[in-house]
Image (cartoon, rainbow, N blue to C red; front, side):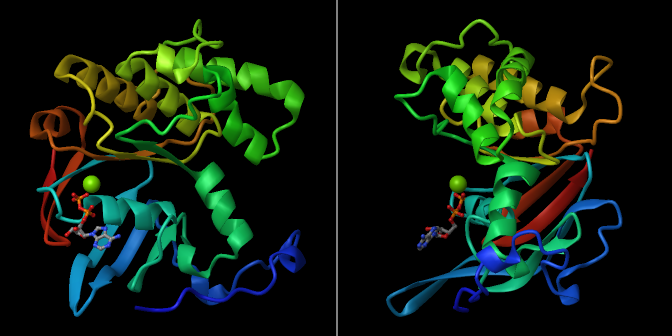
Length: 265
Ligand SMILES: Nc1ncnc2c1ncn2[C@@H]1O[C@H](COP(=O)(O)OP(=O)(O)O)[C@@H](O)[C@H]1O
Ligand SMILES: [Mg+2]
């Protein structure tokens, strides 16, 4: 295992024009994400689990990509690396041309908060906060001025069809509604990339289909999208091949931490 990189003090980096080394970039060439020989090995006692085992993949800006694969094939481990929630054992992740492993901790937290949005199987909403407060949280972290937050929250919730549920707490909502709130929270900072790890895993099949349709609408905002809006690349892990085939432009099947096949739809 590589040690986490030690970084110079973040405080001294704030506002610096050259926040990272030149070696940390790879021309994006229209890619939202590029991985190079990415690995993540877990050491358990004497054995090594190769959860991600040499994945080189380009995800195009604005594409809808689905990851399929048996349980344990490395889907979540891969998504966590792309999200910057975990560090690779070797190899690299470039997001919009910048290598995550070489970002300062300030840049990395900005990446997690503003460049990507993440949706999990278990929603991960904060139970004591209202819907409004849950969706507002990323705006607070991004230091969006207080005055402009309510409109942004409402817009994000309306986009998922929940504009009327602002004062509810997560426990007062159905699973599908909770996942909609989680999607609104993931999208409120208008990220360029949406990562979703089995977002339909805890939902019945009809609700799951609605959630995927919603996510696909985010990927391809229609007529009502604001002008000049950057496309959002969507990467969804799912068990359900039928859903992947219906919505994804590309399906990447993982097996034992490797890409087993790629299907262009
Ligand atoms: N924190 C961890 N420590 C040790 N092994 C892990 C850890 N996380 C995942 N694994 C192992 O890595 C492999 C891939 O897991 P995961 O990425 O969760 O697969 P998937 O999401 O496709 O089900 C599995 O064998 C799993 O047991
Ligand atoms: Mg998983």
